[in-house]
Amino acid sequence: MNTFLLEIVTPERLVYSKQVTSLTVRGVDGELGILPGHIPLVTPLQVAPLTVKSDGVATVIAVHGGFVEVHKDKVTVLAESAELPTDIDVERAEAAKERAQRRLQSRSKQDDIDHRRAELALQRAVTRIQVSTGKGQQ
Image (cartoon, helix red, strand yellow):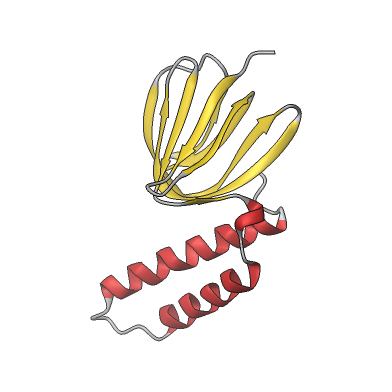
C-alpha cells in the first residue's frame, strides 16, 4: 500500500511523525484530501480537526491554524498548535468555550480585536472538544 510521511510540527515540538495512507485537512477554501502522490501544494489551514489514516485506523488531531505543505513523498503540517486526543483536557476546553461565548455575547462595537480573539478562542475550544470526544472525524 502506498504511503507518505506526515509530520505535524508546532513551534514547541514535533507532534506527529508517521507513514500514513491519507490525510484530510480543512484549508481556507474548504476540505482537502491528500493521498500518496498528491501534487505539490502549500495552503493555509483553518482551526479545525484533521484526520489521518494509517494502518486502517483513523486518528483525529486538533490543529489550530498554520499551513500544510505537500511534497511527493512527505506532507508537513506547520501548525500554531496541535493536540492529539489524549493530550486534551476536556473540562478545560469546555470552560474556555464558555468564557469565549460570554465574551462574544457581551462585546461592544469598539471591541473588534477582542471579538476576533474570542472567536478564535471559541473555534479552538470547539475543535478540542470535537477531537477529544471523537466527533471531529471527517
